[in-house]
Image (cartoon, rainbow, N blue to C red; front, side, top):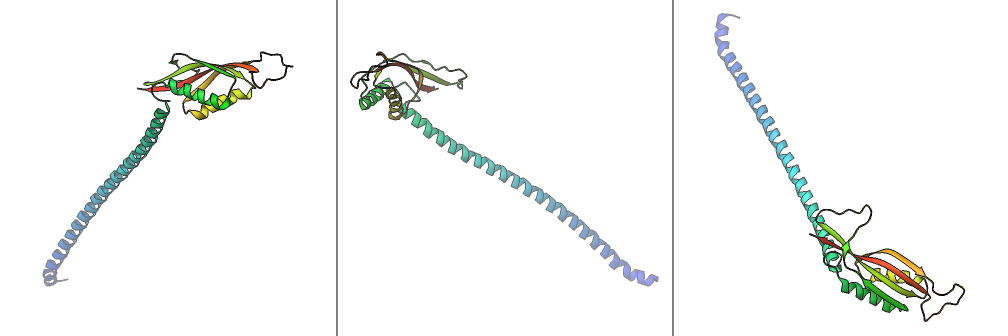
Length: 198
């Protein structure tokens, strides 16, 4: 290559070299910009996913709150939560007895006390109490006792537990059963449970 060719080629070669450098700088800047935008996009997507998760959890919490509120309202309306409803317990017992027509039924409702069972624990701020009721019942036959307890369970939504029951037969076993007078005498202690949530 002679000197004259180099003079003519030098300017285009310099322009080509400058163009290549500008193109490389632009490509590098474009790649860095795209990388920064991709990182921003990933951050935005992570934030969006996190927001969706929080929203889903909030919707689930609201649904649970509604379920618990409905259950709480139902328990409060039945008397399981709140003050003891002694009159409704007695009315339920008497209406069940009217349906069964037991020969004799007397009750003694004792003062409310703390409900305790082995291994039974409650959370702080929740107080579980029970009101013991002693039932003295004259039965025609053993099935009347189960019918009375089942009638109580169906007639009132309050929770009660049976602590103890004893059945005695006043007349000898070989005597015939009387359909007008009690053949068995029973003494049962049941506990009406109430929950006081502070």
